[in-house]
Image (cartoon, rainbow, N blue to C red):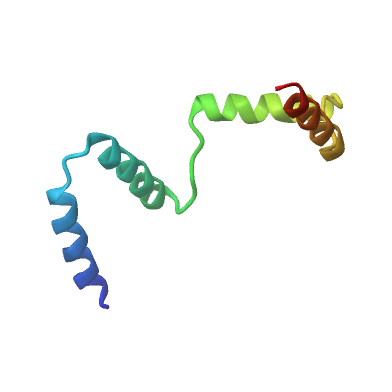
Length: 78
């Protein structure tokens, strides 16, 4: 299908959608594509990434096996 045909189909479908949450999600998706072809983290996301990197650097991590054991213990007690 040609790009222009796809655009016309999408324009019509978007026009028919009244779900604000869906339209906002679509806007975020298209904003990311238009801006740089790269997703830009917002401030909250960047802070979380920075915190995770700091925790990793400080050795504040768990092995896969540690987590599995913790989950198994939790499931047995539930």
